[in-house]
Image 1 (cartoon, helix red, strand yellow):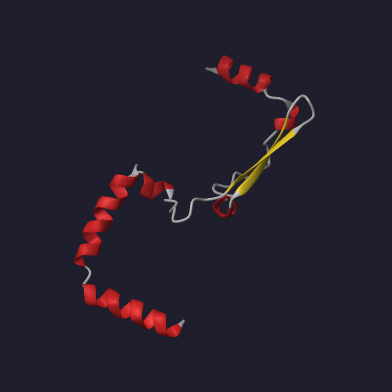
Image 2: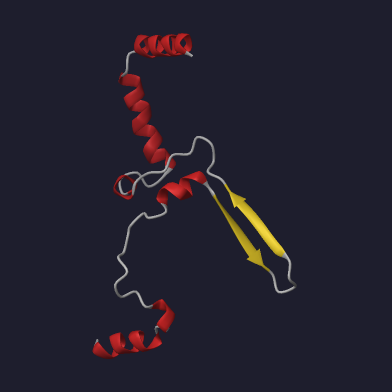
Length: 102
């Protein structure tokens, strides 16, 4: 075990020194939700720029929720059952009042 740790430390480049740097989970989460751009430089000198935007209507699940809902069907099925419990009149009133306010 000690040999493996020592070898891993020996293979780490000096520019990858993480001592003193606090680990922050989800540091760029909000930025990723807005979308991002990547630029790839090819050996012939050309650049390839790709823009990634979130798909409209997509919902990002937090990791603790994702453990219970691994795919779209696992999310949609319980939500449909929950929607069925909500009285229809309540939704109609909200839509009408929202339309009047706008």
